[in-house]
Length: 428
Image (tube, rainbow, N blue to C red; front, side, top):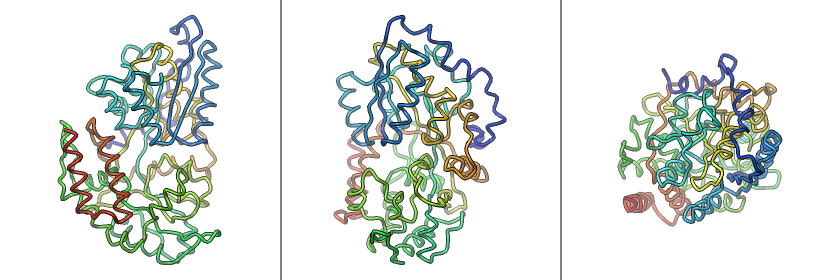
């Protein structure tokens, strides 16, 4: 059975038995909460759009649990984790937090998160989630995460930019070399926006370590051993990044300086890039990209794409004074059908079958395109989500920092590999 089938049964939502999900996932458990008023804090990363969604979902929760008040805060990805790191050191984390896979492992191993096991079957209902999703929420045998969505990589394309550049669209079976050539051709066409800004073909493929992991999987290599040690070599890093050195030298990629200037706005979202390789949960960022198209990841040397999925979680803090109420909030946000109607696919495809079945979008909407993209991936062989070491969040942050230096031309690919390897080994 493919990972896709085990993970979600993605688009065949109508065939998923939701059983008692909608009725017992959040309502009916209020008796488990304390009798007096309780205030919980929740934090997530994102933008104003995601904040509005969370506030609407919180309103639904508070209407169902009038004795629980939820205060919220958010920030961009970097500042969000800076705040969590400071709070974790002081054991003063918010009651509920949003987690990616890497940080869930790190915080779980460090004892900072609430063990959800005692609350499963009471405040928390995971019967609508596949076992593989729960496995992703489990660290060293303990469930710390409450899965809320799944994501996978894809190539978003702006068809109007492609047409203006006079470049042929990419075939879905394109390779990494095809993508590099295509990006260079789109940039070389000299297209500009209405404001006179140059339009680039795409973004540097070293922007995140996840792209390197995708490439490794396509070479038939697992990135990490079971004990968290590297299953790849320094030469693998050099081989991957060297493939795109000509594009950096030719300034074919979206420039780092412009990305910094626009942050947190996405250059692709405002029409200054013809494509972006990123997570499919970012459909909601691209509401202004007319005719948005999505292709799978590039094809590897053996003709396979090695599609894999990651999981977005919510988690509770070990330092919470209200673990039962925290569990209620986690369950509500992860399984209540009304919440999925608020978020749509902006957090990824819902991990809970009841939330997935609640989604009903117009055929031409971005949400419908998101689900259709997942359906299109069923034709490709998938691989298991890579196991990550507890240090992965730091490894990724180091990669991102060094890649920015690489884009500015202050270091070479060899220097990138040497510095990253040295800092990674120092983590132990």
